[in-house]
Image (cartoon, rainbow, N blue to C red; front, side, top):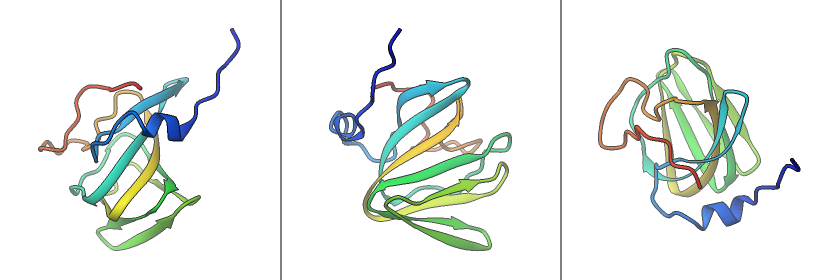
Length: 121
């Protein structure tokens, strides 16, 4: 089998909902998810896994209980497992999230933004 390339902009054009990650690829037990974010997410953590945020377009803030990290296009941050965090984007930001398969976007915190089933595009 010949691997195929994945075009981020093509994939981003297939959805518009904010805070609704879409799986675009899988490698071993990890998934690559594109998301459009705007506004504030909820405080949450992932007790068993790290989570990687890569900014594809725009800018965002990752708030932590003891500080914050500002990310712009081409920058990334790995949030260690168990660390409370709250993503924020003042205007629409396009991100790539890398995390193990089956990770719920809100961790153990359940709310209106919780996505329980994987959506592939």
